[in-house]
Length: 184
Picture (cartoon, rainbow, N blue to C red):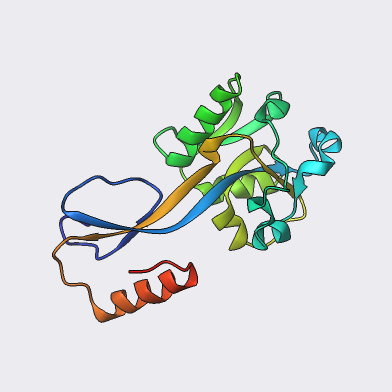
């Protein structure tokens, strides 16, 4: 739709390689585990647990915040996004990197749905810090920083090359990029 001119701007974590599309890096985000607080596995991982407030303040980005191995969750039920979704494919690779196949109880299309299922206590979900920062805090879930380079990804703005961008769209981009110390 962007190439066809139907859309002016797209924000996505997918890497689009097309000569007719301009990309701007918006920010980097991190995938974290959202684990229902009722799961017994949490009892032995207290030093790794993060709250939503920890995520909002960026504590998970510091070197001092320890990461946890996914292996510790291999016996737990997981809520995954479909393999064609970046989060779903990354989650599968991260589990494979740790040498196990996750027990997937739900396979979904939307990260926010997986997050809500984790909040209801039915399984562990991989969620972005972006989603956590912009969602209500749920005391029924704990967060964990993961040991795996796949946990980090970039978010991009995409626009069609050589196409007029409305003033409103340009101002939106300028203001959004200022928030992240990005530049146009």
